[in-house]
View 1 (spheres, rainbow, N blue to C red):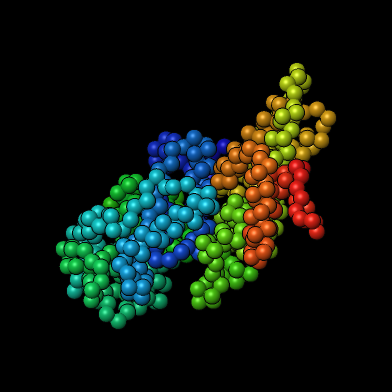
View 2: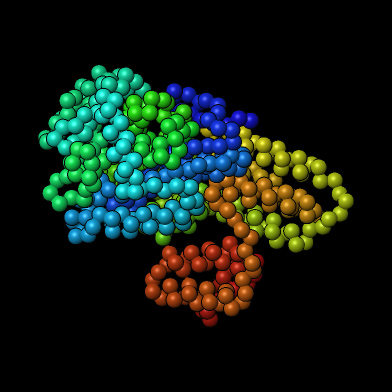
Length: 466
């Protein structure tokens, strides 16, 4: 079955047809690296990594680009407040980003371009827009002439006159039209800056992605993706400047993930209800966080709170337990010449259903439901008096393949040695003494997942293998 994608540009599902056979050119807008990312940033990282993984599962080569905005107003403000250089802050939070999303199972992009390393390409791109009459210089700033691009508003589905009514010219701006937006900003005070034909300055936010996408993927790409909040103005402006500059379509498919709500309220810094991914993965198993994020279709909003994550953990434990039991039973399985057709056919039927759900605009929520159907069938099979290695292997291969698509690979663990168990129990005892109860509970759960049952008694903690 062909993969279908909901295209924000056309507001409908379309069959995916890559520009080049078996190759996907995919650009995802990355973070501005002035602080730790929050879970709203983590969701697109997880969602589009999963989509990348599924393309690879289907045999595509994915050229996956995710940029870092390592210079802008927020970084300059943070540098002044902390008394540090902009590159120092950017480097620190690029490292933190990679650590956080890495813990959440996100693969490294093929390219991670940075604004500061793409400056010549950005300046060249702006110069081309000026030469073509799509941009103009005003006292060291350069603005895109929005009305020069006839299709402006086609992504957000707004007319230029509707947009014009809400646009304003801020103090200090010298735009010819309120809808025009900055491509280059002249230097103020002692801010970080680069030489350009218009004087010292730095790029505007929107132009960087157009320049980086073109540099690494070409004039036209297959998929451009990001959070729903980027649709307007960021992605709208990217389309305008890219298509005006390159003279061709920018991206064939536009994908946007939905918002995250905290206790049914939209996450917002002004409300003080945003959650840092850095802190979340200290409190909850990152695999469970990722599983939770994928339990809702990527285009839909997702509600978040600790109780929902706890519920997701209980659900995910069913999958872990099935894997553990299958691996354990495999050792006692036989290779007799029995008819396994019924079970193998059921496994293949569910595999086809899983792919059908993922082919339909990457519906991970429905794919996870199919996964639980497979777990149910595995548990039924394990209740039989005799199991066959061929069937156990088919269950294991299918389940681990699906988990890998979802970015939650489960590698069979070696049995813990007695002294390793004793060391973990002592670590749990120390954690409880220090009132680090979350750590103590996590150790108990980790041991339980590996079939080690603890019993706390007045004489101390005892353990046994389940």
